[in-house]
Image 1 (cartoon, rainbow, N blue to C red):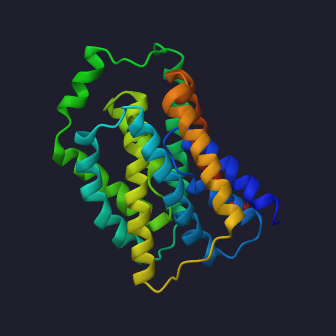
Image 2: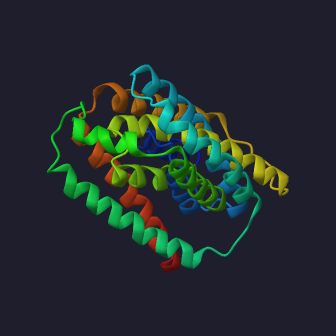
Amino acid sequence: MHFILPLAIGLVALLYASVGHAGATGYIAVMTLLGMPPSAVRPTALVLNVIVATIATIQFGRAGHFRPRLFWPLAVASVPCAFVGGTLTLPTAAFEAVLGGVLLASAVQIIRTSFRAPDVDDVTASADRPARQRTAVSLATLGGGIGLLSGLTGVGGGVFLTPALLALQAAPVKSIAAVTAPFILVNSLAGLAGGLLAGRPLQSVSLPVIAAAVLGGAVGSQWGAFRLPVRTLRLLMAGVLLFASVKLLGRPLGL
């Protein structure tokens, strides 16, 4: 287990960071499969989320893809809601089944549109118009809802935010990744704070696991921000969502 856990965490971090995510759903799946106690899984996943999301935020920001006007309404509303969600412990079986279905449908739609969309980094004028029409209120409403979900489920919210922004055509794909990374970062910090308030202490994370997350996050975000074509990035996003949906839908079956 001492060898398998860091290796698996590093691979998850690499894949997720390439699309601006931090990997909480993957970490949760890995730790659960390796028999870690549930009380340790959620806070550990959030700690790793903070590490990888910080790296991805820096890398996508360096590449010039970050859009402050899209990020701030989402983040300002999501942080207090994620804090509240982090203080709550609710039965989530039905919720996860519905959410898994939504993520699965989102992944299928992203795959379908990926093969119709041009593989370019520039956005056309028609794709830019919806981004300008998104009001701060509508973005804040979206951010608040996702923040609450992220706090409740112990993830940073990227698996909720990415398909929503893609469906809204709110920004180019790499800009969505660049906004998702800091969104995950602030929500993970808020979720950790809410958990501490609720009496769930932070778990110690071993140095090999932290090193694996740092390395995977650095390599993955470098590829996503600077090297990967847009179509490849969209397909990776779909893969991340498929993984998350299978995890959620398979939990009642013990998968």
